[in-house]
Length: 212
Image: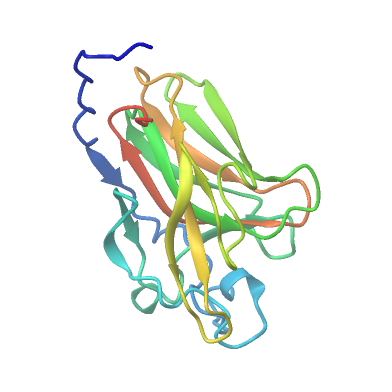
């Protein structure tokens, strides 16, 4: 048998996080209530079937800093939702103008109809090029009812009860930037090709790639 007697290098220091304020781009409430400026949470029809218990403001989920928009202070608009359903944007572009080693998402999706693709995230660089990351159910996120997900690059960021279910939640995932030397001019959130809804509640840049 063999016993390793050398030292194990310590993990790197925590990344420097830069949460992005999504309030100018948000179009969905965290509550399942009707509003003239925001869509009900995931178009749920049952009162209270939502994520209203999610804390807002600057939050630390799974060791990652996110900024959660307070719907009460932004005309009920707290999340960015994209879809090919009527009256949804099929994509939303969030200006960034910064370099990053990785991008962290706090997000969820309706259940995909095929191939588990829930949407995509495009990193658009200031030189006109881009990098596309497809978001897959079971890999990058999971459904928001009775959420279970654990991979080296994703997991459950927050969970809690609502008025209908004992356990709802949101996922986090890390997307490494393949070109950390380039400035990201914007991040474009793209709807899936079916009628699914891809919803982003938090978006954060980090100065290094995700540590596994």
